[in-house]
Amino acid sequence: MSKWFYINFLGVLVVIWFVFNQTPISVYVWFGYVAALLIIFNWTRHAVFSTIRDSTIRKRKVRLATLSKKILPYHKWVGSLALIFVLVHGTLVIERYGFHWDYPKMLVGLITASILTLQVATGWMRLYRPTIKKRKVHIYSGMTLFFLLVLHLIL
Ligand code: HEM
Ligand code: HEM
Image 1 (cartoon, rainbow, N blue to C red):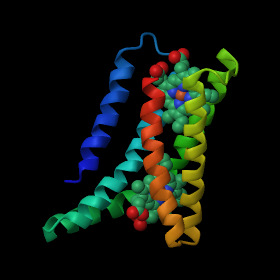
Image 2 (image 1 turned 90 degrees about the horizontal axis):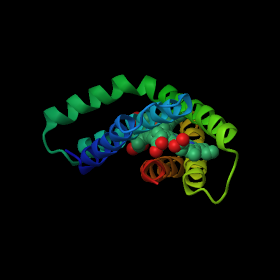
Image 3 (image 1 turned 30 degrees about the horizontal axis):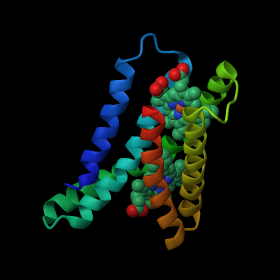
């Protein structure tokens, strides 16, 4: 199994930990949590692909590739939905607290949302006109997105 499965699983644990440590949870925070889980779900595609590439067991390769194909139709909608949830979350948060550059959680949130926008844009672009460059940007911005997301939560 790719080490990314463990790293992603840790990400999910961080999200769950934060959910249980907040009472009561406001509506805008729920939008944030749902978006976080949708992003990690899509990012797990990278862990699946890495495992397929590294595995020497043919049976496992085929099983994972079949699973990956089944999830493919949902991938673009899960990612786009995450962006919508994030936009609602960000708007409600700014409505509640006002906008402050010197509030680290807000600043990192904004950077994370920008990378998510890039991720969704390169996703749709590569769907219609795939190039190697778009694929690389989609993977590396996905990786950046994952770590920024965890940083946004723990700040
Ligand atoms: C990919 C983008 C984003 C995701 C997945 C996300 C997710 C989350 C989650 C799960 C929380 C709850 C965690 C906690 O309270 O510690 C949260 C809190 C927060 N987020 Fe975001 N967020 C994103 C973008 C943004 C943006 C764009 C802003 C600012 C405009 C923002 C500002 C905040 C603030 C201020 C809190 C703390 C709210 C409070 O404790 O009352 N986030 N976010
Ligand atoms: C949260 C947002 C997203 C994340 C984290 C994400 C992540 C990933 C990852 C890790 C891969 C596999 C990388 C590879 O090519 O080896 C991938 C593939 C792909 N993504 Fe996304 N993605 C997101 C949103 C989107 C959206 C909105 C679209 C819109 C169409 C999209 C389209 C694609 C396409 C066409 C592929 C290649 C399909 C395949 O060969 O399996 N992605 N994505």
